[in-house]
Structure formats: structure tokens, C-alpha cells
Image 1 (cartoon, rainbow, N blue to C red):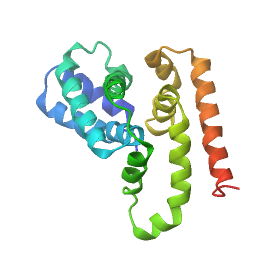
Image 2 (tube, one colour):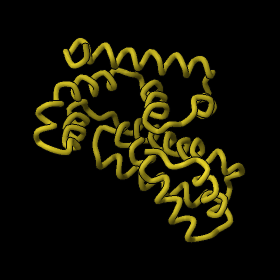
Image 3 (cartoon, rainbow, N blue to C red):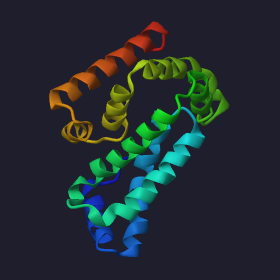
Image 4 (cartoon, rainbow, N blue to C red):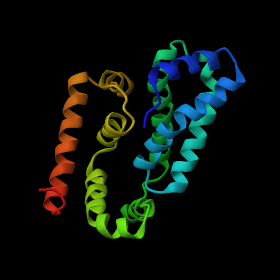
Length: 183
């Protein structure tokens, strides 16, 4: 669940002014969004944790430079994306690492048994997307960043972002249909 944008903006304004309690509130409000972004984007949890910590360190140390608190979400995700790109340049993990870590996130053995094939089909389809398309899809569908902000963040045209999201969703739906998990 995303943080309320109005509350997030007020907390960011206080944090920019240096209020320590606001920094703690900011972490509480936005940590789930940031963690979800990395978990959905990375192949293993150790990388996701490293990226998460590194991104928070940069966000908090550079927060005073944020000019428009209403743009915090896209600003923070731009830091996250840059950290992710840096890791992608260093390494390209195998699909099996990603599958093992994500399958281990399933909450119960019964759900693992019921959803494993659908989950694998979805993960494989996500893995077939380019880094750019996967990032755009996660920002849109998981993190709830407005498409115009995604376009600005990714230096893309708004219509291109809309097309990428639509095509990625269709690709994922097709993969699920082909695996027999959606009719």
C-alpha cells in the first residue's frame, strides 16, 4: 500500500527543514514503497536489501537539496533507479537466483503449492522484459508513481510510457494464459 501523498508531502517538508522526527516518519511512510520496488526488481534478497539501504542513505543525506516536496516520490525513485542501474552494470544475476528468492517470499506452504506455476510464469515473463520496461512497469503498477512522473524520470515520452505499460501487461497476461493460470 502506498503512502498517502498529502501526508508524505507534509512529512517531506518537515524533514527538509531538518526535523529529526520527520525523518523517522518519512522512513516509516515510504519504506514499504521503496522495499517493494527493490524486491520486485531484484533477483535476490541480499541485493534488494543492499540497494534499499544504500538508497535510504542517499535520500536522507541529500534530502535538504530537494526543491519540490511534492516530487519526493519520483525524486526518491530516481535515486533508487540509479542505484539499481549501478548494480546491473556490475552483475547480471541468473534467472534461477531470482526465482528461488521470490518463491521463498510465499507466505504459506499451501499457497506455494497452489501458486508456484503461476508465479514462475509471471517471473519468467518479467525477466523477459528489458530493464527499462520492467522498471516502468514496477513504478506504475507496484509503486504507483504517476505515468507523467515516470516519463520525466525515465526521460521518455508519456505516450511511450503508456505503451510500455500496456504491452508489458499484455505480455504478462499472455504468459499466464499460456501457462494455464488465467483463462
